[in-house]
Length: 126
Length: 262
Ligand SMILES: C[S@@+](CC[C@H](N)C(=O)[O-])C[C@H]1O[C@@H](n2cnc3c(N)ncnc32)[C@H](O)[C@@H]1O
Ligand SMILES: [Zn+2]
Image (tube, rainbow over the protein chains, first blue to last red):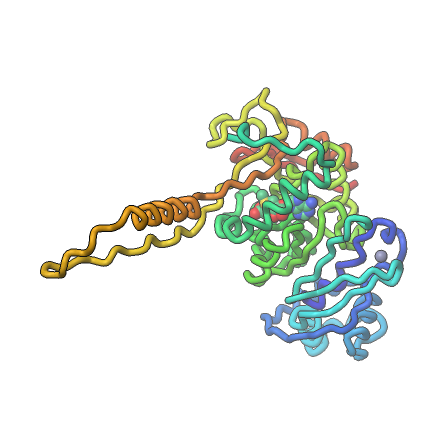
């Protein structure tokens, strides 16, 4: 799972929908790999537009990266190619291959195995 | 063809889908994935018309053949079948295992969605409507989803379903097996001493082995549950789910519709 995807997944239990704690999930015991992708600055700019920045900062911290600015870069800052390149590396090239994702509302743990997150619920929770 | 197999009627809708949809897709995953590579024109043109930089989901993505059709969109695929998601992963797609009725995504975030040949696998009208509502809940206001379902009206197709036929059917999938090789007879050359004639016991054993071999080589047939959609029914479900029908039509034995979130 690409790092970018962590900004688009949450707990799949219906009763957690209304809470803000079900997103982002908390990432622990994760193994990461870097896999190189073509750099497209315009694509990163579009993604930046779509991102929940505070969720991104939280997940980055879970994974040991505290280098992100606390507020979403905007205006002049977006002309900085190095910034976009760094975001590219983080969002698209960083992948979680193994790990656990915990809902901060209900405590349910979801697993990532072989780079595939599994959000299926046991029958009593579905 | 489906008449020689009847569904266990005692199952509740979720168990029915587990037995006649989810288990089957896992069993046929690899074979199924090998047959899925050609994109359908309506799906391609829906994806082509998205704004560059849009973010979307493909619900019931199977082996993910629509993911990455355009490099300037970010698409995430999900499917109930871990077998098919494994195939998608091996093809380099961004995918996860999840159920269409409880999607693991934040609400109101996505620009678009597709769900191709999936909704017809839910076994009650309520669940089909619920599945559409679940997808709509993930879209931002004004976001659009393309839905595709198998049509009842497909008289010219191989299966020949038509108006007036039952709409809830089990459709066979023939799983071809690799045929075990027959044990080769030793070739006799001129001058070789004549072999001893086979005893009755030997002949009986050989015949039995041959029988076993044929049995093992038989193709296995798996049955998948489908609800065959009638003209107008997909639009009805979509409106009941709170969506606005933008357009729709018929393509190659399927009904499709583009639904907008208000
Ligand atoms: C006919 S295949 C279509 C796959 C893909 N969309 C395509 O067009 O090639 C139907 C897919 O729906 C998936 N599916 C069925 N029920 C589902 C559910 N409740 N949640 C998620 N996926 C489901 C199956 O696992 C299967 O991959
Ligand atoms: Zn939860």
